[in-house]
Amino acid sequence: MNIVVEDWEKMEDPGGTLFVSMPTILDKSIAPPDRHIFHAFTPDWCHFYDNLSPKEYKQLKESKADKIIARLESALDLPNLGSSISFREVGTPRTHRRFLNRIDGSYGPIPSRPPLGMLGMPMNTTSIQNLYCVGDSTFPGQGVNAVAFSGMSCAHRVAVDIGFEDKLPILDNGIKSILNTIRDNFA
Image 1 (cartoon, one colour):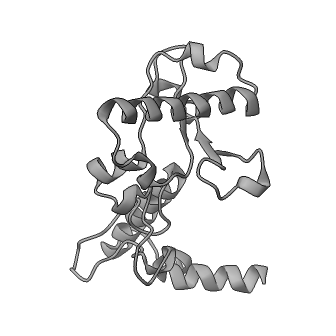
Image 2 (spheres, rainbow, N blue to C red):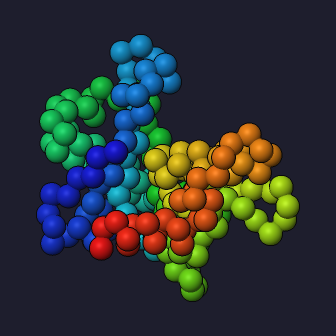
């Protein structure tokens, strides 16, 4: 995962930060030979995409994607990236709201009422015995790395519960243990 910030004064603005991952660096088998997969996104607000005609929406979406690609070409020194793309899928907060049922199209779980942020997210367990949660709506949240960690920690939790693996306090005690460990070791 790379994070691109060209102007720190605009870091929190819509489009101010560019997040990029390239999973084919780790696993070339997920793309055709001599091809790569880029996943790039910037924070944005859903209301920018509301009340547009289908034509206006498509134009805005494509324009934003073109700007992201131009930033990738410049920031990551990838000239001709745009002309090398054979398939491109463009999503917006409106896309996330419609197809992922995200409040205001948020990318990942940001609750709109307290408790806010990751502290209110479940680790992997539920109040129902033998029912586990995994994915971007559980701690540690959205993104490839976070979801992979969620899957790993859930697999560990299941293995401990069925007796295949020993407990690991930092995973087994959930977010409070993680925060305490961070505080104890880095404060």
